[in-house]
Image 1 (cartoon, rainbow, N blue to C red):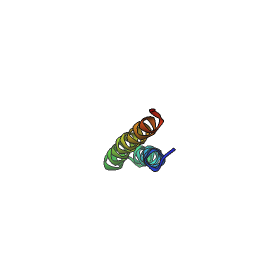
Image 2: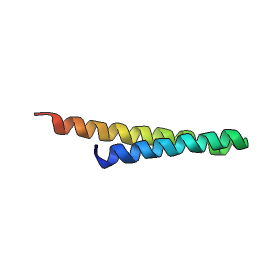
Image 3: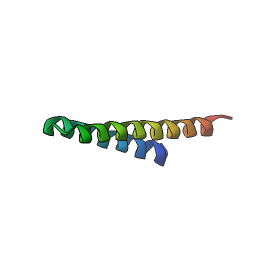
Length: 58
């Protein structure tokens, strides 16, 4: 695993928590911020996955 994969998955997890907190508190802004963090995290993790795939290519 490279740092982009790790940071992306951490960011995604933080986004899920933030979205859940927004649902509990009734804050749509917090929910949206959480969803955005999830997308950013998924994108970064996918970038890291692609980098790993390139390293494995002969």
